Image (cartoon, rainbow, N blue to C red; front, top):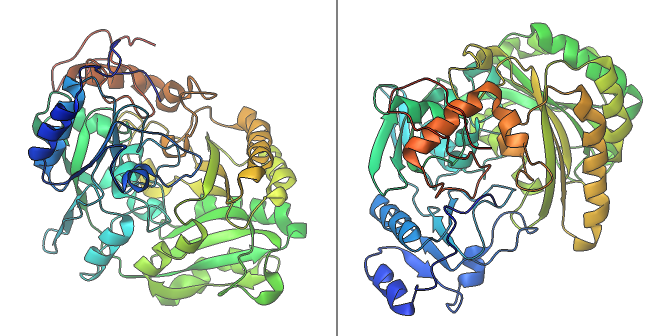
Length: 489
């Protein structure tokens, strides 16, 4: 869970009367362990996470968030910050602390003339897509519509539009932040620029982000869907995908996967529950050009299935939602990849076919194209020189299967890690406080000390520690300063 905000435990002076006073000044709902609904309120996306906070504060506005932050600080309660609630590491809940739950804060305003949108932190990508699609616009999100915009964006944001539009955080114009001292500030390139730099990839370390303003793109429909190959073609299919993506235009995005074919449409019944490999593609150019643009993948093999079709972008974003419902058990590990070498592909061919459940996944996402337009120091998200990020994710429903699922993920990752770029995409980093100790710093490389300095300025006592934690640096910086500082780690 990371370090507590200071050396003090949760304040033993906290009394029922203090909680009652907090409730009286709170417009949302406050749950304690004795309240009906507490168990539901503390439950998060990953059933593997079972933590019991002192309070769950379900906010309805920024004033509620400010009140909850002040209460957390005053009573030494570590705050867990929850937006859409999709984080598999379970950072949306904590033991003995307070959950600042913004899942009810779903206000969205689209400006079609400026092609921007401001959305509150409780929104999911499905919420945002619904609002922007009406204007023929889209913001780059992930690949699941139930994912919250907040967590995905703060960690970077890789998805279907990465090569065309960049990361989610690359499209941020401003954010509203409640800082550790309870202040409300707006951060952008012009105001609090160091804070704005840090939150674009630095996670929830620097405050509670209550709203996000994004640049939008004129994307209404896409040509998208899976292209699947039998396992006998896996090695050559992955090499073909690698070679194709090296020169593919930015209108082409697609991730390579090993999967058990879901038993239902649009997949042919003959393929149901078979272990296969393939690419899930998204083409943002003119629909009439899609077949030619994707020809190297369509003609290779030949494929066992080509499921491409024109669809509204939100339909693609929600296409896999049914495979990842809330309440399953999750165990993930990940790495950045500079190059899909033949040796790395051999490891995928060895372990990918052993995928344990239809919900589980091994995905290799490209982070090229528009994601490379920024330099590694332009945002906190450091790996601008990587070509891919892969995630090995066991997702299952039977507690008895935990040992076997963990073993598949760990053995697969252990085989790939020596061939990787060394760091991890923090949105896929599940065990930062345990077996992955040190991986947080590795994920930011030489951006880490600058992040630690920003942390020292905006959260010097590490109040916001329930995250992939960046500890405050030895010396704080004034807003706007860019000099790196030695951090405490």
